[in-house]
Image (cartoon, rainbow, N blue to C red; front, side):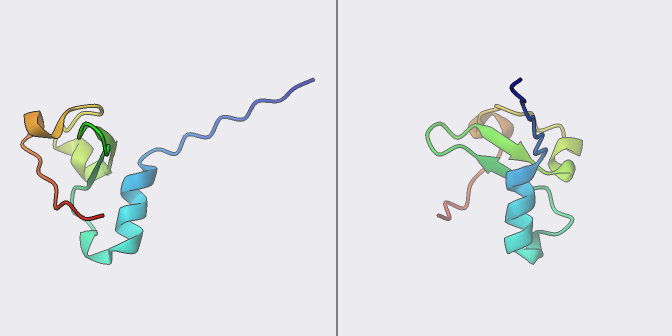
Length: 68
């Protein structure tokens, strides 16, 4: 019998950004995709602001620092 595991890594990338930059604590954080600037992860603070998943950054009034 095969087994399937499902891991729901809710907010994972946004949480990782906060872990590596403690200055982001309690601030809304979103992570954008590389190719089209769509939101791929959001912190709980960003969710409370109504920022949607898959939303293009230009439509949300979001701008990127361009850090890589």
